[in-house]
Length: 189
Image (cartoon, rainbow, N blue to C red):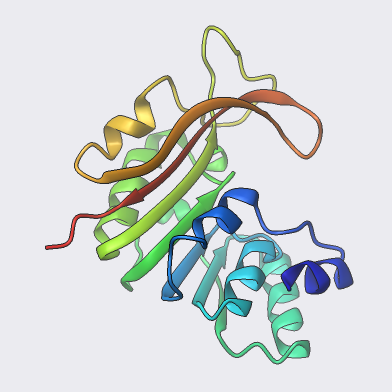
């Protein structure tokens, strides 16, 4: 599926947590926050999701637009957007934010998460994967932001946590660090 498209354009495969989440989430209106060149957006679009893909890098957005055009994918809307602004306007059934929050200004992270939560439809999902910096596993990469133990969980205490862990993992560049990984469902109103 997207592996072929992603390979064709030199992109990494979709994030493993996005692939896993799609086993439980039916196609809906989705937001890929910090989409880069679109590896997750392409995967979601091919599963039938109506994808808005945002990133503050115009070159990445232009590349994703080009790929979507060449592949005749009319269910990807790629937009330039600075996540730090925390000004989403639409409602989504899924907001995926994988390995993105660590590049957000630390002063804005709480507001970004609140903005994601308020723009998730009742019964919708947030998927977050973000680096951590803990005493046991100091982060070897100087990201602007990293979660502390339990910090992501506490931000979603009102939601149903379908998956939550703070496991050690490896980045694509080989760096070993701890990640907060969460798939949460917003309560249906």
